[in-house]
Image (cartoon, rainbow, N blue to C red):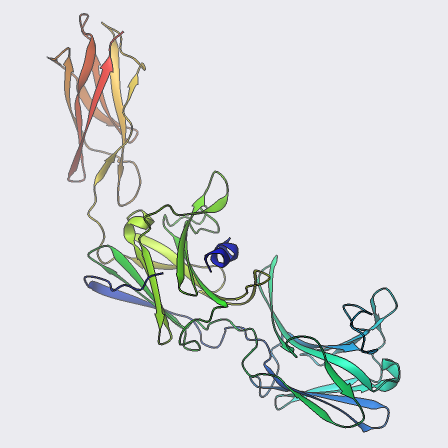
Length: 435
């Protein structure tokens, strides 16, 4: 399943230690898991001479078909799987708005023909389709495959097609005019887990918990993948669509990936990875340690529940929360204490010269905002060949600086720089040989 998770993007069940002081619940509308029409039976008969009647019973849409759904009826008119288009010589499509399209094999491809004489209705969960046998070559013995389908668009370039095939493989063979019914398993249609709410908490030990409710799935089936997208820096211009970290769970496995800006692709996190997940009683629980997110004080996130065709490695149905490419925002109840982070120490010039001015510099950022400090105080402890040398310290452009004049007899400059800002302090040591 790990290979499948990587393809979709591109386990252990442990108990959280400690308790969170607060929780935030985010809701998503129920029933938007984008199920395809669930076909339970297909019946064929020639009740009226010259007209083949096809009835398709659907379990999950008792009144109307969703606007984005349709039925494809594939007909193997010569009962030969080696002829036609993948074995079929005719295609009849019934759309949710009641329109019917008819395609017939011309020897090289299926070509749309006039659908005069075809009629169809969808009422009380049953599609009734009348097809003139003359348009089907006058035959009343053929193979039939009915596909209930539904599309959904997440963007201009991204479309998912959920479906249910009856039968699941091959074609059902009918020889008229007698009525024959072919059963299809119930609940074998493509359908994403239905996201209804996400409860987020964080604990003092650093674990952030996402409890994701999927009431239509007590546990995720092997075809389902749940993806948690996290915007760690609260910037939509970074990462992919704003997400810098992605956690994917499916079939007992959990994977964490990070966005590689240089390569513009997702990269598997290097071990050890502090992420874990479990799934029971209609709730998927994903836990990520805040250190994996860079110890933010606040972050954005979204959730996608996917139904995946494992063989083809394509997504066929999805429920995304929140919708519209947005992110929910969560502020940690137990944020890590702010600290100053000292960067690489450099000198100007690169190597000090005896008798000349020399500046030691190190960038300083805040751990909570990941931004450079704007003010503070710098204490310089500088020695030249083990003798104390006067140096002036200050904050400039988000960095601590110590500036001195190198003594004429010095062979090395060493010491430490202490930066104090926002009530915190940090110290870095340095050593430079003198030219």
